[in-house]
Image (tube, rainbow, N blue to C red; front, side):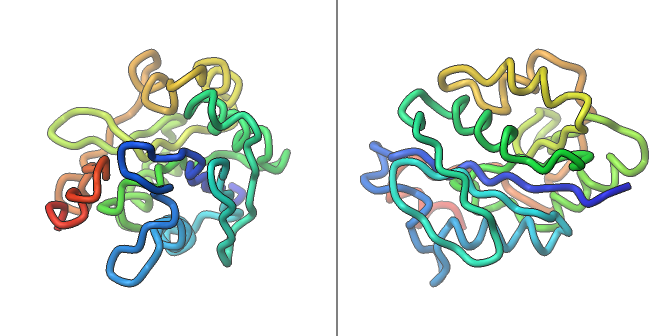
Length: 185
């Protein structure tokens, strides 16, 4: 099996937050850098960061500008999937505003894929959530489901996906407002 790629969705303007979440720092590390580090430490290569509302530079990742980021998360997911190398066997899709997701959770998804699952999602309390791993055979369906604000979660709800419990290694909490930074950890 080839290398599993990683896509970090980081294109939104984060209006409720007040600034693009990709540029927000948590414990001295920008969320975009944290997301790239998590994917790389889990073994993903290449790692693609889909940007839009703010120019973002980061080491260890390919930047994929999404000119249509205002259309919603779906356009960012499509942009990332379309930028994957043609020989990429699978991809892990993560969100920049979930700092409680670490490399351990991504490794669990990859292990489940290597054991034979073609679509895998982290689960918390028995419910599927991001991150999501899909094999190449699902790329077309995932791309088709990515419309408007429908990102990877819409795919989770519409297709059979193997759930991997991650409650003991990660948190699915996301950042919606600056106050969430203090309450997350």
